Length: 263
Ligand SMILES: Nc1ncnc2c1ncn2[C@@H]1O[C@H](COP(=O)(O)OP(=O)(O)OP(=O)(O)O)[C@@H](O)[C@H]1O
Image (cartoon, rainbow, N blue to C red; front, side):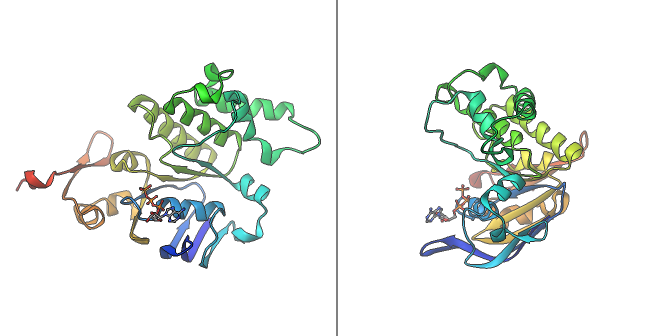
């Protein structure tokens, strides 16, 4: 579904990603982790077509990204950013409805199906009660839920999340990730989620990709790559890794330097 080959990408005068290779199949839920500045957002921006590669290729369903029009790209990929700015005081319902633009005919306007999808997206993100509120009058966590609803309303096979739940409390963050998991399992959506919370990633993402200094430092099934060795190599922080028998996941405890690692 998504194939990134020998990707070099960055900003004018600042190369970031170096020879990144990544192949993601339809229906995968991949966590993208790594230290600040390691290139996670740069990779996501390259996947949306916002940043053009310096070299290398990105294909979606076998088609090079640069061959797709912006409308075609928006039909394939929806993005939820950590902090989306909406300049005008649109209501939350209007913001969610913007997710339908890539499917709409400019001359016909919204159809009953558009309204149904918007209603569905707001129901499953619990944002209906915010429908008439100006987006500028919502809290950070509420705004992230509205932007999630907009991305769902876009009805794309691929969902890219960049710290999309960072402003949410524990309850809403878990609800959001449970929803992503349902979309992955029942609609076979392909989800790439940039996260700093290694433990959240370990619970929901069966595959993890660690970036470090613009290269892929580790990529594989969560159980294989979530090891003290990988974490120490990527974050330079000693870590203890535990198996949680109750749900079959792994969890990590980063050990503050001065406490040392218990023997
Ligand atoms: N618009 C820009 N122009 C120039 N350099 C940039 C720009 N945006 C990011 N960078 C630089 O590119 C590098 C990678 O940034 P990127 O945002 O991809 O990192 P990240 O892994 O997402 O980091 P974080 O965890 O802090 O969000 C960093 O060194 C950053 O300073």
